[in-house]
Amino acid sequence: MHETRLIMGMPIEIEIVGAGNADALEAAFAFLVAVDERFSTYKEESEISRLSRAGALERVLNGEVQASADMREVLALAERTKAETGGYFDIRCPDGTIDPSGIVKGWAVKNAAARIRAAGHEDFFVNAGGDIAMGGVNAAGGPWSVGIRNPFKTNEVVKIVYPKGRGVATSGSYIRGAHIYNPHAPEEELRDIVSTTVIGPDVLEADRFATAAFAMGRRGIEFIETLQGFEGYAIDAEGVATMTSGLGVFTMP
Image 1 (tube, rainbow, N blue to C red):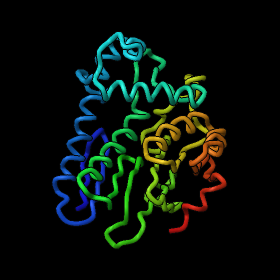
Image 2: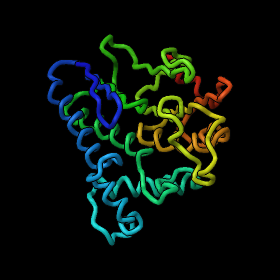
Image 3: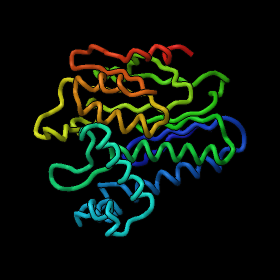
């Protein structure tokens, strides 16, 4: 079963191979809808919007303000990522609000995939705007593949990778515009790199480091190179691609 629905402001595609998967598909989509209700910064009454208006990030982290278990988990992950990336990932926006979007999507896809597995399905593919989790094989019995888009011509694929069950995430400015910023210089537009794709141990790990790497500009692919278990592919404003040394393992089935 293969279906795409518009959730979290983007098309989310789920494919589950095999029989008896309708309930698992519905459960995965229902979970993603619930995540959007809780974490959308575009919904005034979402939990994240209420906490942001109250300036409650630090107090939630300190346990002084009550928040849902999911919210506490995501905010703690965001703080951990900030520390691990030298501050290049930060959910604190220049206007004083908080926006965990750079980590929520990967977290949501990872948990949706876990629900599919828990329902007994090992062969599946979940894609939420370039944040991808997969397991097993595709409907033809072959390995899942992911096409990295040409950011200057989005209907064209410039590289095909075979993640072999790992997670994939892409951060860039070519679809949503300049929505990622360098927390160390928020006034400067990120222009050097237009797309950064990361393959990591799972989609959450790939997502949080892809966002930080993009914010680093040209140094981002070098940062990914230093991370054990991660590979990356960056495309700059001139259309030149740079990849990490081990990416070749994932370019073959």
